[in-house]
View 1 (cartoon, rainbow, N blue to C red):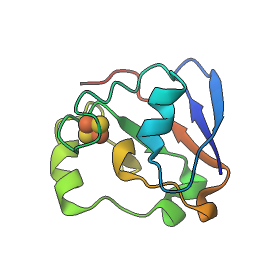
View 2 (view 1 turned 135 degrees about the horizontal axis):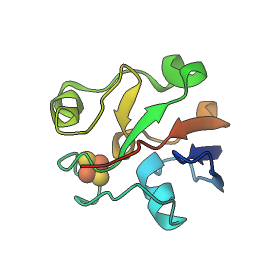
View 3 (view 1 turned 45 degrees about the vertical axis):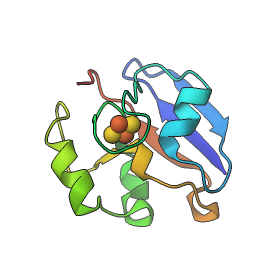
View 4 (view 1 turned 90 degrees about the vertical axis):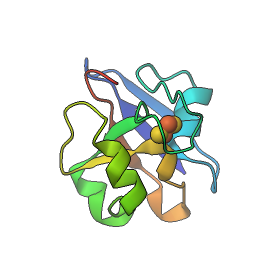
Length: 105
Ligand code: FES
């Protein structure tokens, strides 16, 4: 599935993401700026924070309670905020667009 990361300056990074990987892993692999992922995907750093594009929030779904707690540590959290290490790539997410926050923790 294809995922597009949109940087705060509008730059777009489109990548081919394998099913079963996470949105965070693909950002790191393709060196998308702004996804630090300091904890390596353990849901304990909040530096992989992204905003899910409005058109995709239903298909991506809401955060789990543990993720929600961690999101409290992210900057400028919005209703569409997710930790990208907790979003698993699935065929239904082909074309997914996520936006990178201005600033990470
Ligand atoms: Fe640390 Fe997602 S990589 S919370």
